[in-house]
Length: 288
Image 1 (cartoon, rainbow, N blue to C red):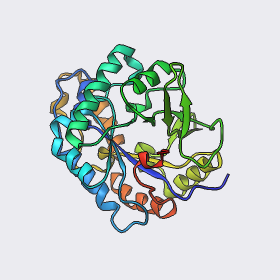
Image 2 (cartoon, rainbow, N blue to C red):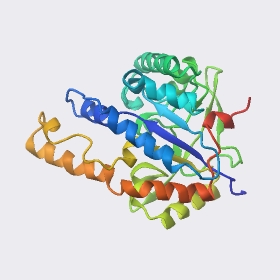
Image 3 (cartoon, helix red, strand yellow):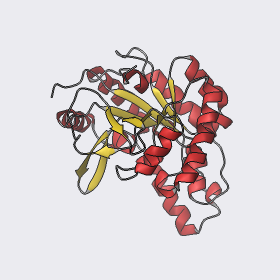
């Protein structure tokens, strides 16, 4: 297969403090300054780089409510607003009925904030797989046109398009932008973004992207606002006070993993986009 001429850059846009505290069962706090700073650093890194400066932001509905101005501004500058559930809950932990309710609320919030028809979706933590046909049916029912939640090691049909087209049992259809996944030292690594993008050397990143294209994938680069945040822990020691001492220590250490080498992201991103220029919002790849 001929190597694709570019990549699709996307951002999973959640309030990391709010999402983490909810996951831990703590009363969630917002950190709008952290989120905004990460987005600004990312957009600054794109200046002067070949390729499109427009990308896809898969945003939670919670961001659409607490940072409506940010979502509106991103849309106004031509970025695509996609959906990342309402409050960053894993899809695999929901029932179909709850997912439909979640999608309708979050999509409505994001469409109101952005002025766009929100048609793209990515599950938090890539928490869907090919067996979750009920979830794909829910997406189609709620008006979504494509998903980018699946991770696989080889596409069933190699093609130059970044997407696969799926006919669902109901007769509805959905496009899928799959991410390449491979095992490295027993770890299932998504190629490529997040922690892997921060921690791996650029030579290994290029090797993984070359491997992905050889297996029929268009590179999908995904980041989070927190991947560029260098201002200390996302949730402070005091904010973890509802946990046991051992849990507080464990989560404090874990947060360093989430921010380690955040300073390296802009230079790595520019290097990747020089080889695989960003092709623009993901919806622009779909057939009209």
